[in-house]
Image (cartoon, rainbow, N blue to C red; front, side, top):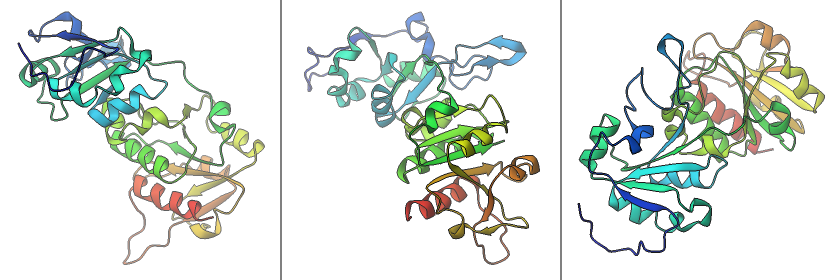
Length: 287
């Protein structure tokens, strides 16, 4: 296998390793990404089997954001074109000795289980999780999710939060894994950069938010809610968002300071959770 030499690669911090065989065990951390019972980014596999629980970045931009995050890549896998696009990033001394497994698009497809249009992947181990107290310590606006189990919605919430001045995301009961590959991809890598924490005391951690000066706003179209614009002016605000359909539980809403609604028209009662989050974040950013 040979590659054209357009960008200098002799001063990269990573070690470029050519892979010709999709069965090569060195790329096992990228294998079978579409397989429910084998994929490496799952913490718990079917049957109670412990998974690798790796964090997988997909595409040039997301890979760059992983390299800039606390999720330190331990391996890259990509085609030569992406290697050269990432050359500046791959000169970072913090990546010294990390392998970049270079392969053709076909070898990559045979390894991961599908044709990867984005042409590059990075893998990282999960660092120690942050606590709720840590992620809200210097925060002014946070998003709190309950029962949101769709990875694309979670990824979109991360992306919206990053773009609309939200400081952290907290995951309450029933939420999907925010580090699942699809979530990381949809978030455009912001799931790796945005501070987040899982609540170990739900909904008790809402009391912690209140103790730290946050006004907790339950987003709901239900009875007793006020227009969103009337609920976002506190010095610190935590927006609570529930799953598609059922929304927030009554127990959780009862612990909140106020219930806020997005005024709707044409008989529509609510928006997709990620869209509703974006509206709330924008309303808050105007304060």
